[in-house]
Image (cartoon, rainbow, N blue to C red):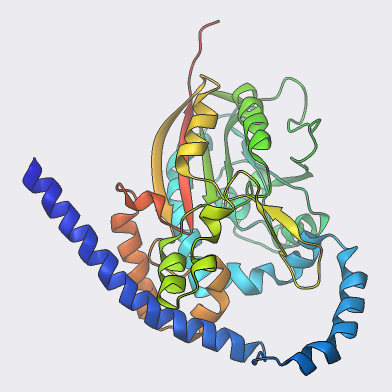
Length: 352
């Protein structure tokens, strides 16, 4: 047994060391290319003063707009349709297909799946193409508009499995998820950080709501931005940028961190979570059991770099890194260190 642990430790150390060198090289290329693509260059004090009045006026004009409505216009081109974005989403689709495989059978009322923060609808359309009924929700009208447009132009979705779309703001403590008071779901999921704009008490409230809305035996699959991203941390450490290297840990779920989700928009508070926090919060309801944990984006570049990394890095290299992800991401301790982590719960049958 000890020999097995020693071997595993040696392999882990070797992988981390190799990853550090690879990340340093890739990160330099990704960040340089991203800056060059955006026309960025080192700015002087004169540059900053000259542009400050223009940027402030533009910011005042745009900050009134909903940040996620503005993000909807560029979300597909900056993430969903990039090579990195497709590889990351493909990883989660395997888990969603497995979790909701039995939802293909039975009436729509009995087998519908709830999606939280559907974005522009890629996940809902994928499941619908697999004959799964989905109620896709999002708080952004812009995201819902894009999702409906995709749905109307997608021929791969069976007519009787067209996703339904509904506005839902989880930040409102009086939100109503269900279609009617008696409706329950066969499962639920939230992909790629849709829960990271909720504070810890919001996550607890959602866990309670889902415990009431999910049928016993149903699955809940959550993909959440992690409080420790190995790729990001190693890259910034190797560049001696210690503040950014540990920014996720420093501003985890306690206070959150302010960030813009789209240029020239009002900053949103983002909370980074750990698999342990999500497990404790959901199992505290006494109705959920964890059945799967794994990293999403362990060796692939972080999702925020997906556009520049997809253009600069060789597709074969990205595919290889995705393959490494699939082999390591489900094992301890690797599931703690991805850009996101996936955690899957099963709704237990609780006797009253």
